[in-house]
Image (cartoon, rainbow, N blue to C red; front, side, top):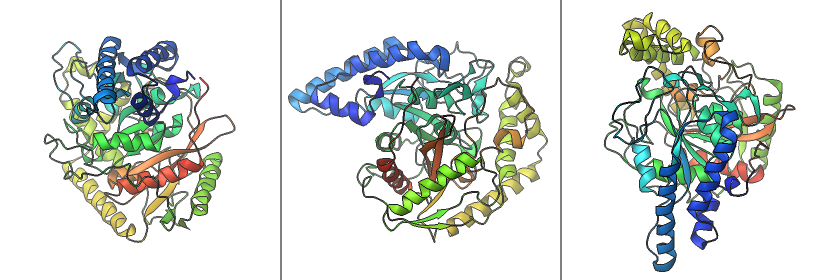
Length: 467
């Protein structure tokens, strides 16, 4: 990997502060790497070289002024970042992976996270690929094709933030913004060997709110936990447009990041009581949990006491798909991904009573987990039950609850409960594919989750693919 494109955001900021590197030379290196690799990975649906270089030049001037006159610089000043194509970005189309959306319209709004990144001095590179409307755990769509895994281009990068994960893993920018409605940050981060963090619901303001409701979170993709904490310092800043957002908490997520996990109570659940897990994944995660115990954590193996909530998450998801479908014209509907079309059809079969019952059961699960977390600080599980599988086009199999999410049974429960959850790499399969360890915290325990992930990362540094 090119030396400059292998640097973390933390390392870049240190180089910028000392003057040993400049945002312009780093941005040029990242753009060159996108040109070299993205034809095989298909992580980006839009790259704006001119805007990125202009932003980098302005950052470079601010760093020069900072070194000379101690003028302030942004938290992410000069750091290249990409934005998932579900998140509004002024002057760039947000097509949501869909051929049904007309790119020729006014794009004059930044989502809260985009606005905060600009204010922090980040260099925005472009938009990363997503399946249509973020509708599945792999990244393929009729509009943008298949996003592939940097560890093996025949395998999926996961989804729905597959473009973000592939870009970060391949050195096409150290940080990226993803979204997570049932695992969509953590699934591709695990498959691509990244750090992927889903904060507590409402910790990162969103606008507009997701049509899939309060299961949908925004979170960072990075190659280190430190970079994820840096990103959270920016992403969690308040925005009045999101009426569901939590009251602003003026927290520095870096402040206690390196204090370790000695004495923390961790519930280790290798299957959640219902999951079928690939043997290599199970072994790697168990070894990772043993490492947490070696660091002083009090680990107890147990199940969490709930049944598989697959029908709850997919029912609510399919209802959201039907709501989107209902807003499309017949001409637009004819252009949609067959997988999204099938989800909408499944959603159309749900009655008002069905949806209320699903939400009631969700509430019971959330209450159960609030009570469970009274006895533990963290939960440890595999992130995904299987390694990355073959990359295939949209519509290659019948869409139903099992094909949509049955292979990722550890991610979606914590969208339903809105708890913070992170994935960190914890090994490779014999075929050289990454495996992820998931750490879940109590609601609002975002800093604790990052702290535990950093403790693990210090003993088990993140590996990079040799693409």
